[in-house]
Amino acid sequence: MRFQTRLFIGGEFVDSAERGRIEVLNPHDNSTLAEVAEARPADIDKAVAAATDAFPAWRDTAAADRGRLLLRLADAIEANFEELAQIESLDTGHPIRDTRMLDVPRTAATFRYFGGIADKFHGSVIPVEKGFLNYVTREPVGVVGQIVPWNFPLMFTSWKMGPALAAGNCVVMKPAELTPLSSLRIAELMREVGFPPGVANIVPGYGNVAGQYLAEHPGVQKIAFTGSTATGRRIVQASAGNLKRVQLELGGKGANIVFDDADLKAAIGGGAFAIFHNQGQACIAGSRLLLHERIAEQFLDGFLKLAGSIRLGNPLDPATEMGPLTSMQHRERVLNYCKIAREQGGEILLGGEPPADRELAKGCYLLPTVVRAKPADRVCQEEVFGPFVTVTTFNDEDEVIAIANGTDYGLGAGFWTRDIKRAHRVARRLVSGMVWINCYKRVNPGSPFGGVRGSGYGRDMGFDAMTEYTTAKSVWVNVDAGIPPYYAR
Ligand code: NAD
Image (cartoon, rainbow, N blue to C red):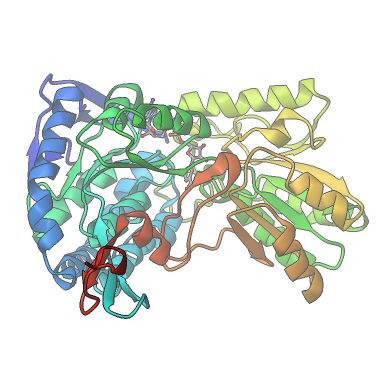
């Protein structure tokens, strides 16, 4: 497999100014996949300068023409479907089954959605006093810095660059240091389909060096960040210098409630998808199972059987249902939460350790893990970000709403019931950016995605994302109003 390993700045692939390198590992066996150029401040300066130079022409390009380039990019992604699926599986450990079914098609779909929306998102005319015309245009923000994590690196190129470019901004995107390969392949495709130089710049680098510098940069007018809540706070501080706009998609601790009238077969399958897809490395993972006392044992019986039967293996094997975590360091973090759970009286019902299979011994694998715990325990409050789900029981609706809302987060939450009145009542009471009823983790390019409280602010996707990447300009015209009456002499 060939990988692009250089920084994408001003339409060219270039080495980093100081020749820094990042070693990119395959989480299946920790072998080296590639050495990628590491962006440092001098490179970020170059990328911001390229984006600044490209901005006036890109802003003034007809929206339909900006959209057409995004549509061509979506086509190019589909034309290179299998290669992108393999790059993403090798770099992140996502099973190839998932990258073929979800990551690559969703990336194309999201670029296509924003390609289509580019010339349909527009300003308005306000009905003001007679004699005046007041119209509002939506103007691009300017140069936008985008910082993304390692869990869905390919998809995030489209979530972030799609709306930003459609709205006429130029971007400097910093992928996570662990997983830069698919975004650099996207950079190649962007060049191929004809994006003007400097409109999009992609600069892998370390968070505390390149990321921090980008977040502080006075030439950047907005930072769009996806990542942990702790880093989100740092981004807000770093943005203060030039008061840049900030959009934060942060962590989550999704409740997944099973009421006693639920279709249990659907809830068991949906609950397993909610936490074990992508090895649980999803901000919207359903990482807290809240089970009504009456169905708890029956649910758990089926859930543990299902979780115990999930096929772990090499991500490139189409039969694999769960791959490795994305790094050894992250697996250690998740394993440490197993220790914390036990220390606080939690009971490990399944997993809690790496698999015994010797073929997987070199990789970052971890068994699906199910832990019985109390709502106040650290494992029920802190984001674990692995194939690790807590189980807690409840007796009534008020109690479970209090538990579900009882963390610092508010990203996604879901529940299973056959009672339509309860469905809408509970949806209203959950403090959460997204709610799923009898399903989990549904995402669509047209549907706003984001959280409340410690899960951040702002929305990816949909018309909301276009609003995030534009500023309203209100223009007043004296059409026929004469001079103001109070000075009319
Ligand atoms: P992280 O915050 O450590 O890193 C995310 C990105 O920020 C990386 O590119 C990293 O290099 C960069 N970074 C790190 N320190 C920085 C700094 N001081 N200044 C600027 N940039 C810096 O997060 P992670 O461990 O890579 O990702 C997992 C987290 O991402 C989880 O908390 C998860 O919930 C969250 N996430 C949120 C969403 C969402 O949409 N809400 C989606 C996916 C992941």
